[in-house]
Length: 224
Image (cartoon, rainbow, N blue to C red; front, side, top):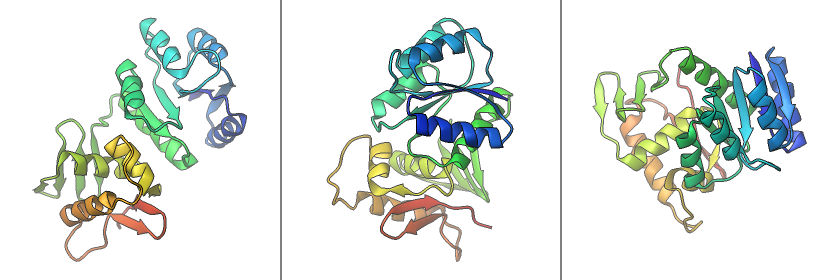
């Protein structure tokens, strides 16, 4: 797989390049938007990892230009911003996924594999973990044969955690990504919603899918 990384932070770009090369990917790197757009427009890539904040052309401008030119290369946006509108705009412009910074290399590789599967025709609209199933199109949640009733906010919270198993999200990150705007940092709304989701998805007499990380936040874990 040939991957283009457009990222102006050279440390992050080097980190990504090293991690992907260890997985035997072929990786090109550009550190500004103009050079990244030129390469993306002239070379064939399997996936582009595109930072949104770039010198020269920004990431959304690059994405818009590629899609207007009928270039359908899969694009994963990398963003340090938490604004919901920006993520929505990127997806509306034709991005295939987005990954907030900071992230683990394992998570990035998993996103690359997932996007590759979707492009190759393998369904990505359904997420599974054990007996737990999320349908991202119908927004249906099931545990085995049982249909679970989650509110829209509960579903969004579970989807975010389930997309990145093992990643620890702070309460602030969960507020920014699920609620989409700033809350009083002293609010306990995240804890309330986690308890609600747990009460609905966890198998009887079993460990919880959502693990509390003391002093930090929460993460989704694989149950054996």
